[in-house]
Amino acid sequence: MEPQQELTADSWPPNERVVSIDVVRMFGILCVVGGHVWVESPLGGYVAIFFVIAGYLWSNKRSLRSEAAHRAKKLLLPYLGWMVFVSILVSYDYFQSGASTSGYLRHFAAILAGGRYLTSPYTAYWFMTAIFVACVVYRFASSLDRRLYRAMIALSALSTIVGPQLSKLPLAIGVGFSCVTFIAAGEFFRKIERCITHPRMFAVSAGFLSIFLICNGCAHKMFLKQGHFGTPILSMAVVILISYSALVISKSVAVVIPRPIAYMVTAFVQMATPIILLHAVPIWLFGNTEMHRLLLFVICLAFSMGIGLLLHNLPKNGLARKILMPAK
Image 1 (cartoon, rainbow, N blue to C red):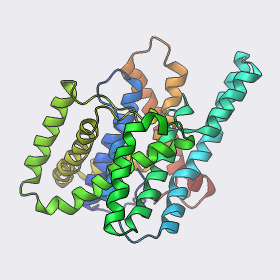
Image 2 (cartoon, rainbow, N blue to C red; image 1 turned 135 degrees about the vertical axis):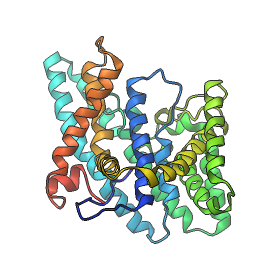
Image 3 (tube, rainbow, N blue to C red; image 1 turned 90 degrees about the horizontal axis):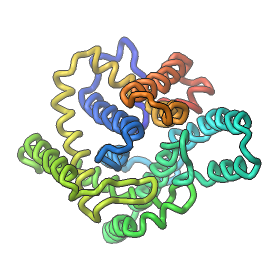
Image 4 (cartoon, rainbow, N blue to C red; image 1 turned 60 degrees about the horizontal axis):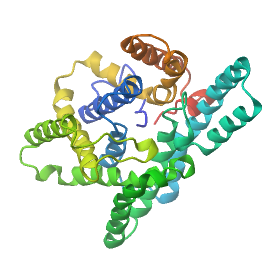
């Protein structure tokens, strides 16, 4: 979910592969926001697509230390930065509502614990620490010999059985370890992609099969934040297949997508960090009202994108951009 390199007027035409990945990222971001607005939707675990993308784009060029430093800069720094800003807003609301000191202390303890303990408006913050853990663990696993690598991936997959217990670990560490499986699946698909004779047909078939299994209730909804991975094996397989189908189909879309639309898609993805971390603020403010869900969805996007656009116009090497919306 990391932002792409900054676009300028001289950077066109964009690389079609980059645009195709951005199309999938945009789809994932919209699913995250929509899933928090329409909580009754049957599709869950949509953030897993970002773990699959991380594996699909995986490179062996980084060391474990450089991987940790890179991910900390892109994930943990904005996590802490936006946590401070949103916490100021929440603290003001606590004082205005006359909340007890013990209630505020419990809220502060939840902020320190992170992960599943964070509630609205920190709804999606767990994802930042979880994908950090997943990428660092996968980097470590990739440095091992093949047998140990496979053993670690198998252990990650098996850990989903006790996912609810692992999710109790602070900062979504346990969930991040279980999600290593998604990264491995993404890299696996990239390696075998050329061996698939008719990738588009496979992608469309896999997509329809996955949707059928979801609608029939065979693949139960996943709640990754709480460590619930749905129907054992099947729910994870469905999300992985949907992710791969999106990656394949988006390549065809990238070929024909008009230049202005491609620019807007990539610009949208560049604002992924504030959109992911701030879209829940309007839900926190208006979620209990009678506001129409579609209107709330639009407000969530407008609010988070508006802040993203403000940051986009700041110098990319400036402190605010480095902390709140780091560029690649």
